[in-house]
Image (tube, rainbow, N blue to C red; front, side, top):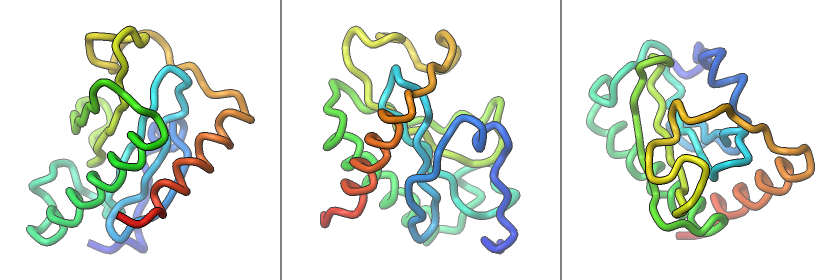
Length: 140
């Protein structure tokens, strides 16, 4: 597994923006005004399932999910944090971390397949990215 040859799935590239590169994963912001939503993508081609990672990388993955979760909750307080690794449409291994609030556009159901993505306005996108980058960089 060579991260130098990593290629991001075109659907993830179209819907998300790069926030940060952690030791294993790129952390990407889902460009959807309806939700606070991060996507973590391990930088290895050919991965489909978490079990495709070695044990040490699985531990790193969960550390990075925890970091992303804390950052998202700090920036976008929520009633529930949803984690998901579906892969039914985009097979490339990626994990969703979604801040959910009672009464949001998809509540109480899942965010997937609920309405159309609503891209953030440029100013809001840049502000959300800046605050999330700062939260990701904050110590523990």
